[in-house]
Length: 449
Picture 1 (cartoon, rainbow, N blue to C red):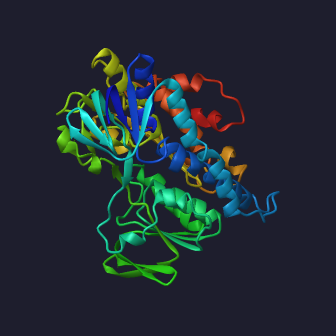
Picture 2: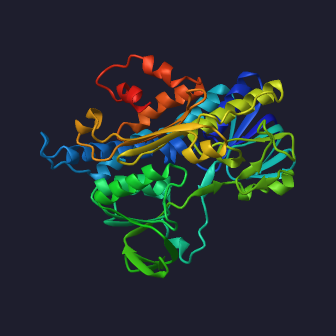
Picture 3: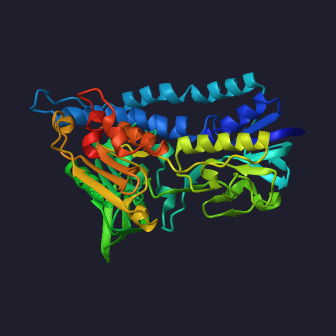
């Protein structure tokens, strides 16, 4: 069947929904397409279910750190019960999303989308013609150049494991590997992370990453640096990872091998060339208004777009808002990537916003760097946290915070204060004048500056 729409949105996640809803509110005829359950990565197989598991791991970590200091250890994670609890958050999402879209008057289609020509999308037996098209298909795990990739377990599969394997091997040293590794370790599994280079989590400050690696190893996670995986072999119920470590043969056997080596835009099967939509390694090639550089009726947002934005849910949502504004009012809005707070939900957590020390120097700023081991501060001693550090980058000329980098159990919330400071270009003198509730983690901010 053939259908005509003002806007066709490919995807139903954070980068898709805002634009679809705003255009529908403006009276547009809108269609949304997804080959997977409606709702997108974050609520179904990403941030939200992961954070449920992290919450349980935090409770175990808290109890273990305070063992002998007023808390008696002995609590453990019941994995199957935890997964059942997690599903109370994820299972209602597809139906709830479908209902919300239908109530808004948005037409929904299920199946793989592909371009027929510059204005037409094929979905199963339906052909949709759109005055405008938004590509918001998200990301997928990058294909690894190793033998035996069919034996890999992927992040969405890990989040559906009914039983936790006894020994897990994570290939790659990114967000997914470290977050899942810390969850699995607190749940009692033996855990290994294999990192090809000298340092994992390359987008974060090296001193803090080194400290996180140290903390990870102290908590039973074995991190193998300078180790390249060449193949994965299956034998009976186990898997053997083979490769090289520092130029020497390396072999490791485990019950499950998890892909944690990064993600790429999920745009390969859209037949972009038929739609005259140019793309590159980082996604659909777009201009400063998130409009395709080759097909002006097409826009892209989130992980599917080649932008300066980090692959984070709030960035995808912001880009979707920008696309909506540009569709409805003409190209006037540009995405703002100055403030992109990000967290790695390990134990302790690693957080960052703004410029790194290296980037600030490269951009010509005269900077003051406050790097402080905060593990002896009351905030962390009271819960017996062994590793905590802050690194604040300050512009000497304007007294403004350029970047903040934190490692601690409180980092994920504290980083938002620094995001506010950078967004509103507050001076450190301004931040020091604020009266914070005490004793709280935020009350330490003045001492960090």
